[in-house]
Length: 158
Image 1: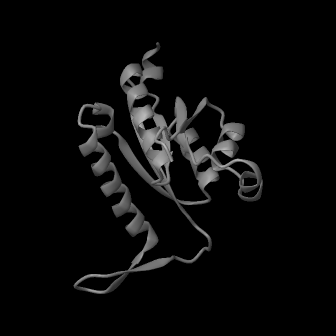
Image 2 (image 1 turned 90 degrees about the vertical axis):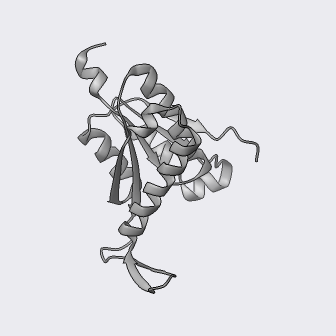
């Protein structure tokens, strides 16, 4: 393995689903085995060019930009996974990245920008008509990415 190859991160796009957690855990194991860094990415889907706000309940009712809410969710999500898996050092050293845009486009752009060695992402397991009607982000990334892509299924019984 070349010194340059060991610095290339594993990119893990997540959407907070059970499949995303399975992908993070698989990527962390790979990162440790390959002595590679890991970058966890969440893309806030930008449906319009204007900012989207979400009302939060609490002592002070306030409106917050979706990016801010997503950043908090991402931090909390990673902290929960790190707490559940203290033995996976790659989880604790992972870089966290939040982007706004169309998920597939941003995943591909991020993978190129960080020179990812591979992309590891979860699958929601859609098949048949729901896959045709809704499309599959994972399938699009597999087709369009310039680096290897690993799709991880959630192993828990449904």
